[in-house]
Length: 417
Ligand SMILES: Cc1cc2nc3c(=O)[nH]c(=O)nc-3n(C[C@H](O)[C@H](O)[C@H](O)COP(=O)(O)OP(=O)(O)OC[C@H]3O[C@@H](n4cnc5c(N)ncnc54)[C@H](O)[C@@H]3O)c2cc1C
Image 1: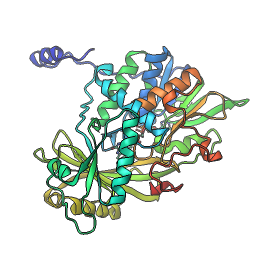
Image 2: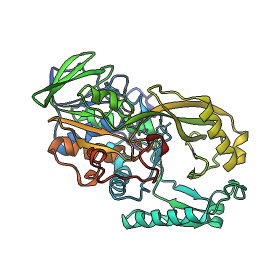
Image 3: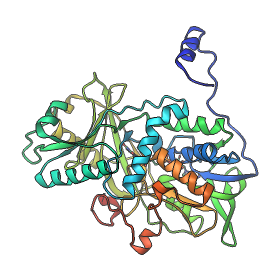
Image 4: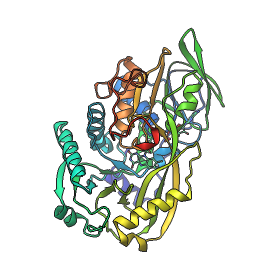
């Protein structure tokens, strides 16, 4: 079933009776060539690229709940490639290029909107840091523009520029950044993988990982044992728990991150705006809701819901930056479980167990990574070699200390970045 303008017109004129389910609901088979644990954005993208780029089709994605019920459907949908350090820089740059072709590649409307991401700065020191980051982005081949206070005012006149504590000095603008509809990304990859023969198995929790003589042989699930010579763990906030099934202790802590959405308003915020000093960022959805968030909740937890103190903190930051938001009514808030790595950068690597691969450490920024991560993880699983874009995302950097990518310069404490 292909989507096109003609198809929409035809279905509209014939009662919308021709649409079909986007994927099958298969029973798990006894054996596959590769198993992907986790049906979030990264797991589904991995399965898609395994089938599309490497021709593997005897693959299953095992999801304990429903597809897209995890962080992929809970994030604030920001897509960007504005990292400064080698390792992250080339990875996110590659990911953004995949975003730019995603709708055509998947034949699915993910509502990708390159409306620009504006990072504000509030001191001379922050301006220097923004200039340095912008130069790194341009060296990588991505776009960045350092804006003066007046140029920022022309874009977002409703901000409080003269706030006594954090007056706005200017901003770093990344025009190719923006937003996309998060669950459509999961659905698009699911549909693309299913149409290439991948079995997407929902309500199937992995409860054990079978290992013989240092080699993975399959998994135990709530729907029975499944054999496979290659198994990829892509479970975001549950990474430590699933890796523990293989006897591994990961350098990952799970923390809650909350987000908020207001009632629908007329268009008033054209870009994504981030306010690092107050820990607040905002964009406006295509339905009109103001979508915003802030910091982690600062305690390790596996509960996908937040707490009132951080809600108060985020609202205070919102009021400081843009007092007009006080008139909007918040409709909903929710939380997700972040897989926080010590240096704030991800891991895509083999483990010490043959055939067992690991993809985690996305912290609060894994949505924009979905295509790049799926592409690189599929490459690793299929070829046993890292993809060039992800060669530095190694697990052993936390053991050896070599190659750490401390993007925020906050040290090795999970909840400080
Ligand atoms: C509030 C919030 C805002 C965010 N904002 C942004 C943003 O603006 N931009 C950005 O880039 N990133 C953002 N993120 C981060 C981003 O959403 C995550 O980094 C990313 O979605 C994680 O990868 P995933 O999609 O594969 O995770 P998930 O969707 O969580 O997928 C993991 C899946 O594994 C499954 N699973 C777990 N254990 C098992 C098991 N034992 N067996 C089988 N399945 C299992 C889970 O059910 C889940 O579906 C945000 C996150 C949150 C919560």
